[in-house]
Image (cartoon, rainbow, N blue to C red; front, side):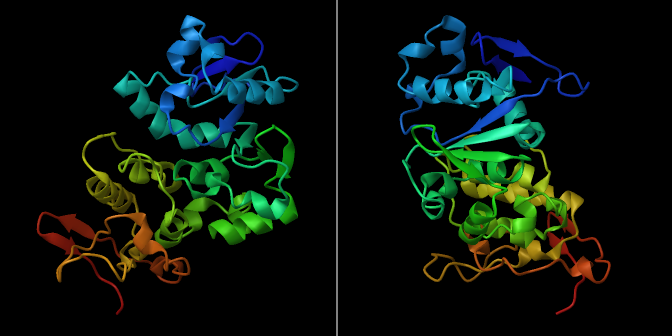
Length: 298
């Protein structure tokens, strides 16, 4: 794991699995519509960070972290995105990095001097990647565009508003219920209506939510990526709610369609489905080149 020093603006690599990773903060934000405005990996290496338009965002995150943390992780610069192997490894590990962070700073760049009720109107709550960044960390601290503190996701007034906006249960937000106990359909419904810049990322951003790993294949298209995500989920899960999606009323879908959904948005109305195995052991189902063999109650 590559972390950034909050005092020297220098990188240091730490092993992920030997328990020697120091306490660190992590930034959650929405990227600029012009990615080159962000402080990227090579800007830190080349010492050109202060020339980038988004340096103030990075600087603000470091100032918030500095009193308590020597290290911070920021997705724009702590991943060398010119390396496809490093990018793939980072995306497959990102949920764990957010989960292990001591604090997550959620920067709402489109909000200033806002009330608690207004924070949920931020663009941050409509993006695909920020779903795991809301759920995984133990602590999420919200800040407006001036780095003025708004509050913590553990605050009752804030978590109530967030839960209503995102449909994510308060018990999940507070970490009192493990995410693995929530049905596939419910977790998919949290992503309905969210957006990503690249179509494939709508699937990739959900890997941590479902605890699966798969290679990044940018160019495969959002539909194929989402099919692969569901296939990866089915390898480890007998949860039949993965099939409880419903098509959009205006969807241009032929009379025949496979069992797999094409995107998470068709799970918008599936938030109340619970797994069949919640009251009876579900028999495993077996995908094959000819379809799916499955037993369940109708």
